[in-house]
Image (cartoon, rainbow, N blue to C red; front, side, top):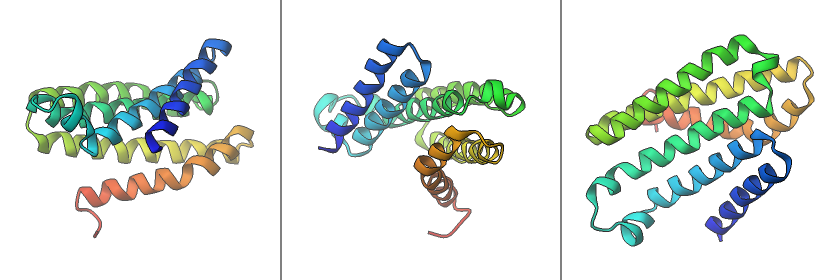
Length: 174
C-alpha cells in the first residue's frame, strides 16, 4: 500500500505537469518517485527482485535514488517558494551547490566504496534541509502565503532530516 500511494503521488505530479505545464509538478514527481525508489532500495526490494545478481547495482542504487529524491526536493522547494524571483541571493547559492553535490555523489556512488557516499549524502541532506527550512522561514516572515503551507507540510520533515544526518555523522548521540 505504501508504494502504491507513492506511485499515485508521482503519477499525479506527472499528469498535473502535463495538463498545467507548471515545472513544480515535475519536480514534485521526481522527488516522490526518487523517494519511492530510495525506500524500495533501502528495503532490499531491488536486490531481491530486480537485480539480485548484480552486486554493483545493489551497492550503489540506494545512493543514486537518494540523489533523485534530494535533487527533486530542492528543485521542488525552489519552484514552490519561487526563490529565483523572491530570494535570488539564496537561490544563487543552492543551484550550483545542488548540481555540484549531485554530480559529486553520483561520481562517488559509481566509482568508490560505500563510506564516501554516506558522508557525501549526509552532508547534502543536512545542507539541503537546512536551506529549505531557512528559505521557508524567510518566505513566511516576508508574508509569502505559500510558505505557510510549505512549513506546515515540510518543516518537521526537514528538521528530522537534519537531525538524522547529524546522527549518522556521529555529531549528535543516537
